[in-house]
Amino acid sequence: MPRERFPAPSNKRARSRSRSGSPPRKRPGAAARTRRPVDRRPPPSKPTEPRDPDPEDEPRSPSRSPPRQLKRPGGAARITQAEREAARRRQEERERELREEQQAAAAARGVHDVVRQHYNAVPERGREWRKTDSKIKGLRSFNNWVKSCIIQKFSPPDASLGEDSYGQNLLVLDVGCGKGGDLQKWQSAPKRVDLYVGVDPADVSIDQARDRYNQMSRRPNRGRPQRIFQGEFFVKDGFGEWLGDIPIIQDVGIDPSVGPEGGGVSQRWGGGGFDVVSMMFCMHYAFENEQKARGMLRNVAGALRKGGRFIGVIPNSDVLSAKVEEWHKKHGGTSNTNGGASVEAAAAAAAADDDDDDWDPEKSLDDPPKEESAADGEKDGKENGEIVEDCVEWGNSIYRVKFPGKTPPDGVFRPPFGWKYFYFLEEAVEEVPEYVVPWEAFRALAEDYNLELQYRKPFNEIWDEENGDPVLGPLSERMGVRGRDRGPLLISSEEMDAASFYHAFCFYKV
Image (tube, rainbow, N blue to C red):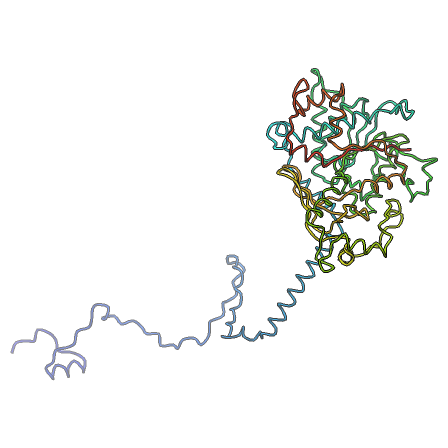
């Protein structure tokens, strides 16, 4: 019998398959021929703790933060609606307290900071722009000419007052000097200026005034730098602060004992050292209250020597009074009080029980009203019909005046402090608060500080009187107020209307 080609299976299972006649089952692929060892160990129940690294190993990385705990669903619902409401009320209370603190701080600063911030924000556009591109270039030229007139007329000594000379040269204190717009006017004064001290509460304006002064000192005059006065500039509020704290003013001389507060000592022994104190387009801010007005006059009178001049330009209270009275007459002089009765009738009825109708400026200043709240004052006025709560407003396309609250139907502002209005001037003043300066009250108050009135004129009258002057007439042509050779005015009717809102003054120290 021939031998089998393949040897018989060696294992028992193969032999049984052979006996049964079924073919043996093939293994799937070569990999099946070598069986992998199976790891039959159970998986670890928790992560294995990392071993501590050997000191010789690489620097270990920062340790891992512990795993975050998962929040249970609905955990935020533990904050009740009442707690949310309480938190909201606490937040509103904190916000209300913060607003009250800010309002109190603003009230404590007064209008001073509002005005300072406004003038700090006004850009300096340059002389060329003011003379060519400005919409109010005619008004600018006219106002500058009027200021030049006042400086030319009242900076030298006055022979009619028995004055021969101020000394060698002038010492000038310019309160509210702004950006230094009058520096060249003082450089051209009929008597040479030795010292110019400019003060203003707006720090940006003072920086620009100092820059303008430095440019003037470098400007050539006939090929050489011009000889210019000594200029000093300080950030200072000439109404709310004592100017005697400035060293250069102390050196020139300032008398703290002037006025009623000083007991009259300065009238005999004291006195300041400045020849001129100037306030151009700024003194009306002092009439926010009596304290500021007296502080302003104390600085002025304290700085002036005997015979010195206090010159300035302010809004004309006669114009303000006439406009307010005209408005009330035009609107029938009625208010919504007293059953619609006329204000005149209500005021007449009140006058029967009140002698305040015979108001005297000096009496009002000697016996100022009680410091009541604005609401109390307005309530009293409404009850007796002496004031009307309406918005009195007038102006034209380049300027506007607006009283936002109470105004007297007869146009007489009494007591003389705190009558606020808003003034707007195209390109120059963005509706800032100003205060009425009732002229007779101001004149009487100035006399308390040994300042006697020498001159007062509205702008339009100054033009009528001075345009033919041999010096000031040609000056108006050079400054662009009118054409050459006594030509026509180069200022529009609207600009002249805006200019007529102001008047100029001069007091002298006795």
